[in-house]
Image (tube, rainbow, N blue to C red; front, side, top):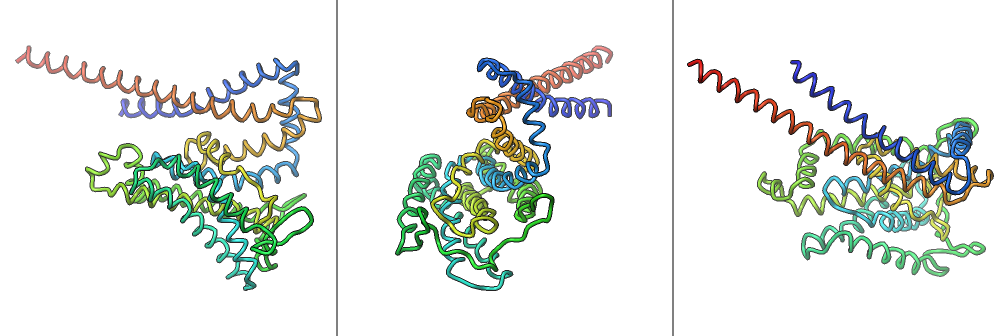
Length: 371
């Protein structure tokens, strides 16, 4: 029992050591960078903490974190399969575009209109990601190359249809799809001074489903097995190619949800001003959260916090690029810290196993001598 207790204690210590090491390293490196610009890092942190503690900032951060979290989930599904879905940005954009087109062409009751728009977005995102999965399994094309190319193709398709006389109309200097009817407006959660986006509930449910499927189902076990070793998975009877395609389809379906908070709760159409780049932010947050639903939620909130408070730093005469530097440093520190702790944990386990084997060998030797 003592051996098991010691092992659990070491595991907990190692689990805490990684994020602590990452935070300390990130703070030190960021402080040095701020000092190099001739500014006081402690004052910068105080300004960020004060501005981030305001109620309107907290609402803004949470609402901003919702699409970031959904983007990280989409990326993480691929990561757990050892697949690098770099095309989440194109998948969510083309999904939101066609969902906006369908939603703008229909006027149904809300309980039908909203699910239909979301399903269209998930379907389009799934199909767009599935193309990369099929090319990988049938032609051996790297998903990194195909998803990057599909990002460009998605942008070209949207650009072609997002013109007056096709699937969009001109509104000043902008082009956008027809506005969604009022029945398409998603609910909000009343808070002061501004409401929270109701899609927060969807994000929480999506995170739970992600955790449950990966950790409590046979499909999740097969997915993780393929990600760790394809030959071992095949030897265990797992259809690897089918799992690759399925994982890409699921990743694309999750990507389809990313644009829904904006489409259903803010813009109510898809226009040339629709947010871009969220898919690439999801890659950083998935790395930051180590593909864990809770870790990615913390990472998404941290990203929103840095973006919100970074605007205040500009008023304090800090360089506007400092927030981007902070984000990059944090991601690098987390990745490096977790890898260092993982390697130390492996060496610690190897040492413990070696000590146990040596002790067992001595016992066997003594027993042979006494007999």
